[in-house]
Length: 130
Image (cartoon, one colour):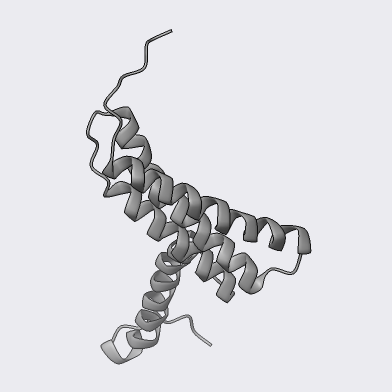
């Protein structure tokens, strides 16, 4: 038995295939490690709700008016909370958290309506600084 080094293209093919596969695995492992693993429907639902909330908040133009900016930013934030509360009601089983989710839906919807009203009809008086 001799330790002969393969020299022809045909003899090199299995070695090249092995090297290519090895490189592909070396490249793929770190990429897969960074990917979020969404194994369940609830994981995907929460991820979608958070992404939608952040996208909506990022699209709010700042005016430099504290009241306007506060209300405009809080509306999508509250909508995100409502979406997450609905996910809790759909998937959650803890009665305490389900009750909290119901309260979040009611109170935050009411607060959204108040903020929308404040945006439509801003107060003209300015508070005195303390």
